[in-house]
Image (cartoon, rainbow over all chains, first blue to last red; front, top):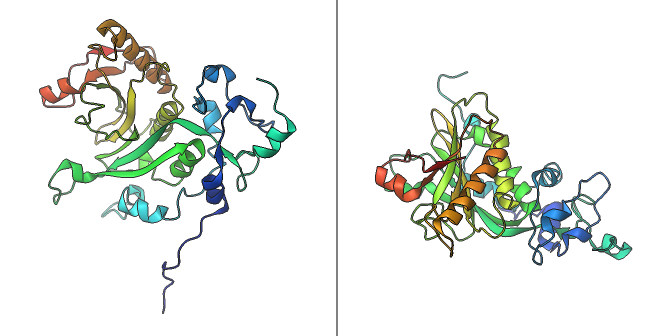
Length: 96
Length: 218
């Protein structure tokens, strides 16, 4: 039985391609967000130097379910080399 | 600033408009590097071997791509740490940006009941959103979560330790640090009777343990 190997280069997802090619917003107060989105508090960035913004938690939390793709094509390998598997996923001798 | 024109709307598709075809992303004020310390093993010749650089990012969108695809703190093995530091600063006392500094920290001893994933997430969001300090203070170097047998600990590392720095008197320096402690306490949603504690790294080193006497509290 030939197991599928991962020698083919992984293709970036559409979201990752968009992330790589997107420009940085330069004036946060000019972005027109969809009506369901709470815009950043303009007072927070009233003195913001170009392209350097602060963001409140409530604004940032809105991205949680919107950008969910892996941030690079080699992400799984990078996880194995650094953080490893979640502790709960590891078989634990004598438990459960 | 004026209301967005039709052109702005057409050119500036955010991830909220189109998760797969967005054309603009949200810059962070600083680039940040996420580090991980795995539990030590007996083949390690030094502590440094267990510390690994995971990823560097500079947008809100990329932060969430990372957060949504990385092990949650509550799933890490004992003696693991995550460190989120400004790019170029190693999450160690010896780094030039940290060696005169210190940290605000709080230990959560009720490991089973506290929502550590949410608390660490909120701490990271306060760091990358730059709401942990007043914009002119430039004190914060990074944030840390430690997973230990009896507790979780979250910390905020600062460049100075209240003895004066960057042209500030020690009183002004302490005020900046106390403001950071106050904001950190708010992020952690701690009650009136709970206190976050600040200690200088060099005090901790001299005491030979990370449980140095707190220099100040908030």
